[in-house]
Image 1: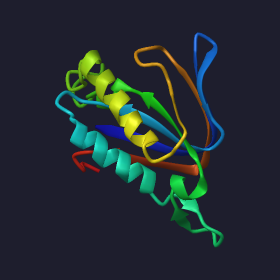
Image 2: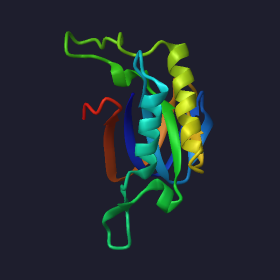
Image 3: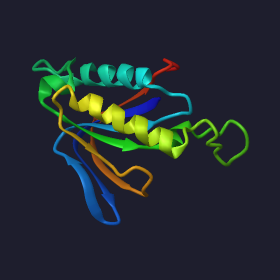
Image 4: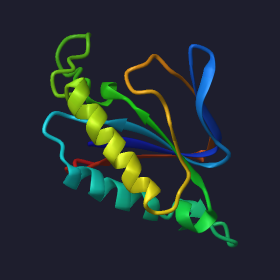
Length: 149
């Protein structure tokens, strides 16, 4: 699994001009799932994300997690995170999980996040979405369950 984590002051997702998920502040997650990813990958990343200390404390240091600040999560499935552009100019998505596999694991991942007591809103799996966010900082991190970066 591969996730882009963005600290956000506000975020929402629209599908066909209708808002399907909205958070006041917290983290926006763009979630990519590759073929063969498992519940273990989802568990590792869920635990990592909820405890990432990327919110500022009273001294202005990144020392607080989304749990500490009472933030929320907006999770958006994004298979293009496994687009391979090393050859040619058109992305190859062969590594991305098939939709049924990806959807199941993405739902499971979101349920794991909710188990921490967080408000978790989502986009709509497989839909064309407009993702709106005010990236706070900006703070953007890349996570990979295989610890590639």
